[in-house]
Image 1 (cartoon, rainbow, N blue to C red):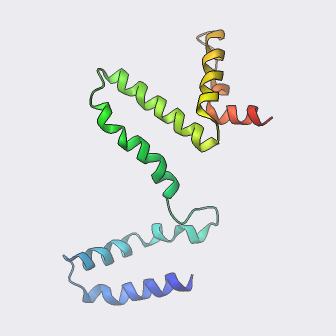
Image 2 (cartoon, rainbow, N blue to C red; image 1 turned 45 degrees about the horizontal axis):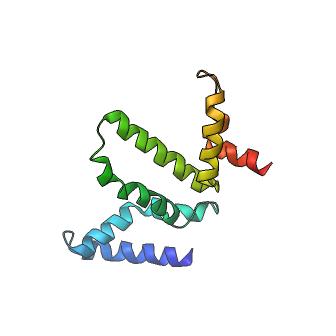
Image 3 (spheres, helix red, strand yellow; image 1 turned 90 degrees about the horizontal axis):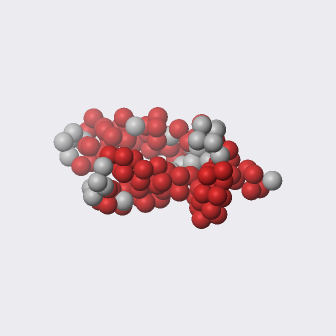
Length: 131
């Protein structure tokens, strides 16, 4: 953490000297205001240093936004969002989405419509597939 401590000391030293409404002033102010968030990963080794994984997952979702403008109904848009969410959950859990869909679409019709289907969710499918 010596590098982060040096960066923080430098930011604290130049903050009063930079003009606030400039790009440098904005960058220094933002960094100091977000310091606790920017350095949180140093307090717990399980926390990643960046959010690249999340960024990659969200990119798929963000590129679909333009398509959703043409959803005919709010229910159709909600259904699309649910499908996106389930497919991304499969990816995060290391589950092949096609294998999961085949399983769910053959299993679901055999169940009562009031039945609990939590075991069909991708993260539970990953556990049963591994067993």
